[in-house]
Length: 514
Image (tube, rainbow, N blue to C red; front, side, top):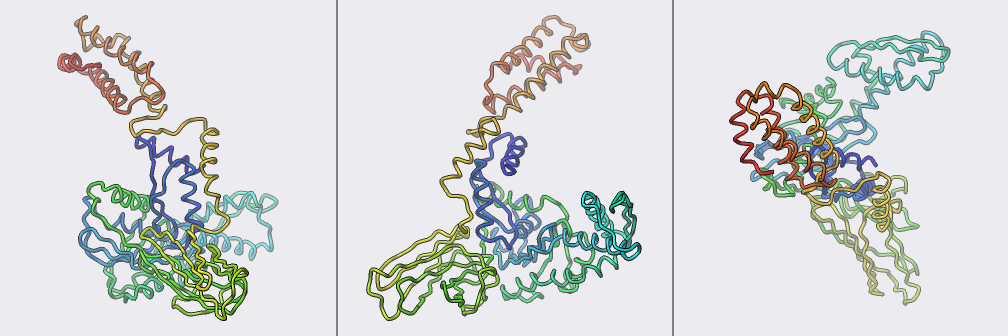
């Protein structure tokens, strides 16, 4: 439903159907989470063309000029939002080539975590002064909003105060203040966690921090002074650029969408990506895991691995994904809770003579858009399995998406535009109302102020009546081109109504064929 509403608003702004999408997600999103968003797009009638890491999209929006020009440099983008921290190391190269060197993130560190530290600070402060008190659940929302405002105030001042009514049971009000020093002390572990994804992208890309040319800090928490100070300490001598625009990721996604559609000036833009999470295999019944692809492996890629097992009638492997996997092609123990299962490879050898050593060759193929296909072949039987790894078994069945889309259309009570030349009924209604208002204006005495000739009045009124008749007879989806023409005619009539140069406007109007 949310994706449908987003599409609806976009179509009203663009005045044309929105049929394709480019999505942005946190770097820590696994394939199931990404596919859920793709499915939501399909249900709302849009085709998901690509999925970008949020910090990558933000970097594209900030560092690419409006004319599509790119200044060659190595940039680090740190996107600290309300719910997650994303980091991308991006190489901007000649001929509009963008290479993502590495991405990393922390899904449990965001601006909301910092707000909760302030909430805890005030509750503990009250308890120390007045003894143990139970916070009224209905008031927690007001307290969080007050603490969110206090956090923003601390970005520009040394102290922030809050005042919350009926915070505690019994109707007790609360007022207090917090200094920037207290805030930073309450979040000391967050500052250390903030550095970890940065170190990870530098380590996995094998790039020394001295080689980074520019640093961008963006997102809702970019204005917090402590983050800028940490980046300046890490990248000595580098200027840390702050970008607090909320639509930065959306603008980056729009730039990439324009490049995919070959629109000027971004038609020559190319993006080379990496896989954000490590991929491997774990045999059922055995805790050892084989890592085939490290995180931040450049795409497209194909990697094969030959697996051996003792003779048995049933051999099953899990396809795993997650940063917990080793970043080298080694073997270690990984629990079910630590990695995300994308599917199973199972060979039933009960009908064949089982060899002394079962040999299975597995191939991981990932294309440039990060779509994973796993192929496995058992040597003795010649059996082959191919799995398109969209996500785990919690995903919607593919055949139910179209049905859900139809149900949503019926529940919403309207049909989605099917042609780029069609327009919404809202636009038609607005134009009809504008025409009616203009008719009321022209029916008054003010028409005589600018037009004294009766013949000129008749021409003006006839043109307006012609437009009104066309609007009344139009279907709910008239041609967008005709709608624009009618709108221009109405605007001309309105200018004529208030213009002293009525003769020139009438000459233009007489030449216009409705």
